[in-house]
Length: 108
Length: 116
Image 1 (cartoon, rainbow over the protein chains, first blue to last red):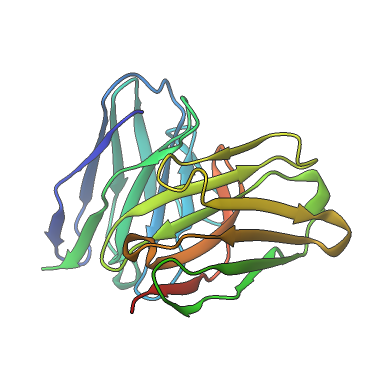
Image 2: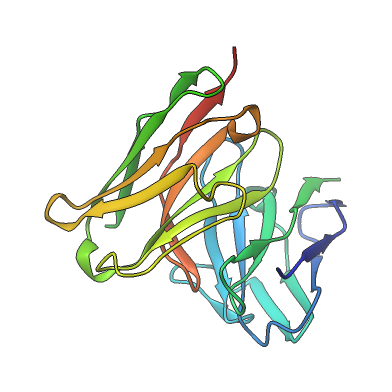
């Protein structure tokens, strides 16, 4: 099973600033990585798949990069609605697909 | 618009059983693979089970293998999860999710609480 590790656990950023979230895989997952956003009391929402492709309707301020074992989600200019928990998921080697433990993005 | 609506959650004693349902609409349900994913309180996401569009391929997480059974009824646009021998650690919000690579759409979830 591939273990996904996200860092940091919590990230404090001011509105309008850039946020950079990291996700590391215990072995290569090629570009088969997705990012999800989850707000309190809501289901996860797909943001990025294929490591760098934005899902339908996702604003351009969200971008993903990386391949192999190191991945990054960047939010270029934080809006109030972006403060949430972000999960990464690998779907290269499955079953099982596996998720990171999440990064909480909070207002500084 | 894709809609996935889970139901059937509730409070159950350890060792008990429960059946979750997921009603799908807004897409050709019979053409898509679907999954159950759960999230324990304050924890991350855990994939539980996968079923292919024709039910030919089924997978389970090791943590539920032998206790949970996934099934679907394409005529009713519905997904099910039969859960037996429930444990405290099965307490979670259970989501149904369309696709796998990636999980493109999610329902709002149903809460299962296992407690005496």
